[in-house]
Every structure is written in C-alpha cells, then in structure tokens.
Length: 143
Image (cartoon, rainbow, N blue to C red; front, side):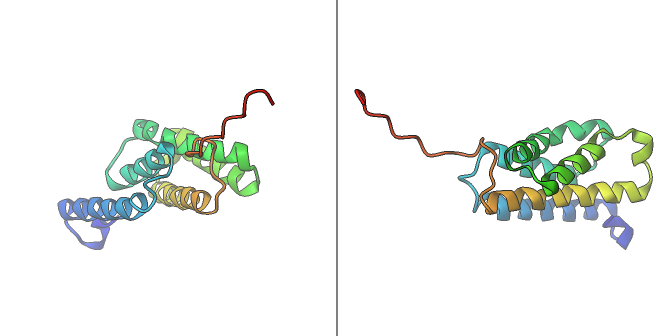
C-alpha cells in the first residue's frame, strides 16, 4: 500500500518494517511483564503486517487466535464473539474470496483491529488465564 503512494518497493518495505518495529517496541517494552501469549500475539500481528505473506502463512497468527479465543471463553460478550468470528473468517476463508484488493485491505484492517483488541483486553484487565498470576498462599496444614 505504501508503494501505491509512489514510493519505491524497497523503500516502502523498509518503511513498513521499521514502523512495525517501532510499534512492537512501544507495545512490548511497557508490557514486558505480560503473558508470553500476549507477546506472541503482538509479534504475530506485526510480523504479518510488516512483510509480504502468502495465504498459507496465516498459521503464524495462531497465537493471536488462541489469545482471542481464551479471552472470548473467559469474558464472553458480543464484541469478543465478533472479533473471533471475523478473525477466523479472514484466516480460513477460501483463497478466491481473498484475492480482490479490497479483501486484502480488509484483512490488514482486521489484523490491526485485532491488535487493538488484544491491547484493550490487556489494558482493562479482562485477561485470558494464561496471563501471569501471583502465587496462591499455601493453606496452613491442619486447618
């Protein structure tokens, strides 16, 4: 999409990769104590957005699907249901449906929206159970 603005392909790919690196640092460093699944989800989304991929590379987004599915199981709600359904539809839709340029742009927007959803889930405390939990105090023996 950046190359459509008249930027050379090599420069466009470097701009996008650098932008995703900056976003990754801005998201991951302040949230370094979050769960590994959170970090894998963010890295998967940004990796998918930063470089060109074929349809069969969608497997790299499985940490994102697992994160959203866990949040949906624990939180429920219409919003998480829609996010999971739309994300799943973009990942498992037949290739012919995803060929038009409008669908590819829609995929990019959906992945970016999924990143926003992951950040919102983490920020507002509706975390999946894989987030680090403080250890439970031991129950005293004999009680």
